[in-house]
Image (tube, rainbow, N blue to C red; front, side, top):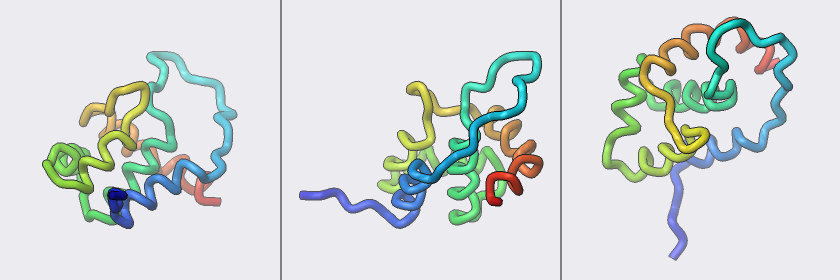
Length: 104
C-alpha cells in the first residue's frame, strides 16, 4: 500500500528539485553554516502555510506525533540532524537580505 503524502510534504519535496544559485560571497569569519539556505527556505514555506510565527512554534509542530510532521522531520534535516531552535531563529532573522535574490 502506498503511503499518501500531504500537499505540504509534496511542496517541500518539490523544493529540492528547484535550481539553486551557488554561494558567491566569501564565507565570513566564525563557525561555518551547517544548514543550507535551501533548508531555511523549506522551513519558511512550512511556517507560512501552517501559520507558524516563531521558530519555537516550528519546532513544536515538528515534534508532534502527527503524520504530516513525521514526514516533514526528515526533510528538514541535513547530515542526520535537524537544526536547533536557536539556529532557526538566527537563520530566519537574516532571510530578508537574501530572499529577493532567491525569488528573482
